[in-house]
Length: 517
Ligand code: CA
Image (cartoon, rainbow, N blue to C red):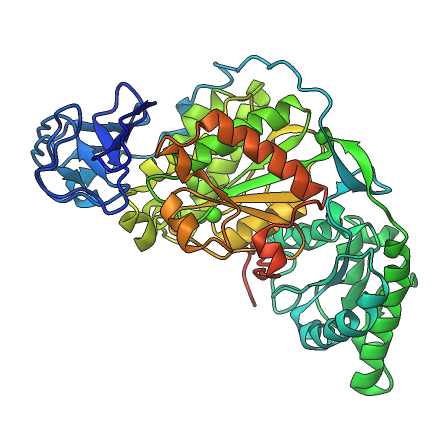
């Protein structure tokens, strides 16, 4: 990376030697006629994080960023111009039948030994970073009663069990009025099932059901619902209550207290860093995401993988246009084909809804300098670092092996976060350029800003400022190590993230590609 740097002089970042556009670093942008240190002069005002052209382009010439083509000039464009979305024709998505499969598998890097965190060991072998009572639901009908009960549990019971971090109701919009046997219904069903098995919930299952709904409690507890003993005291059906609302609340509180007592006995113990299951995603991205925050995450991801941990990246619509860079990195042809399978599934899902892949970029992304989904994708996959991709999970599937895993999810922040929780993550990291107060109730969320200006405006929401990379105050390597240590401290409970301190969390949002009836 070439960085032209003086604290108040005009500055830009060029990421790759092949690039013919650079990104403006200065907070207020640069006015028309600004001369950079290398002699480049702007032909017009260019805002921060937007692109300036390095050479004259004729119609059809490629615009190159990250060393890859992000679009073709729709009209002649002069050197020094602001390269905006409407000047570019977007390249078509890479065809899935001619991708390089496992052709450039990165070598395994030297192991990192001796890193640990303090976590909660679960009976199934996983490790929690928090000790939370999760109360699963089969249907939205129970939400009102359960929310009422959970408020009372938090007010009246939780203070008596100081070793329990929180009580979370796993409420959602699924369960009834849905085509439960539809082809794609397995996705929301296994998501509900696997959310209840998240390592941060300590394995103390409690399911609240209405009674008559389509999604039955047995299906939530086990894939093979005939093997579930429904007389077990992990289940309470509201329709069994003979004395109305008051009885329902009392029953739920009683069942919750039995579990709080057990969870309160648990203590953190020292576990190897390999027990970390980190889920990564971005939201409110800008053109800095791929320069500062995402490369720092990528560096930290490589460190975690060297320490034996599990790192998940996601967001199908944000890797689709750069998929050729991922299939080549898959550890085997089989893993590459799984990546292709997930891309193909999503292509068909979007086609069914007659949605275009360009529907991904938001007005905020564009304001932040991202011209299209190709440019966004190239910046997004940087999070995955430089290691081989070891596995692929379908939406709502739970992880079964360590390493770098592509967890197929939509890019929507809440849906991605929910599916990564179902996949078994015990820690989440989220990069943002435009800014979002996003949080999750079931796992700590580390928020990393792509720009220092955002970190300064939101000092009590942003945990790590990666904008320091753009201004030359920190290198990607330094920030990568800082993140690595911060992850371990947050996992240990020594550090709380801002979202955690403020108790900010978004709803569990299921991905239901199947019909509603
Ligand atoms: Ca996202």
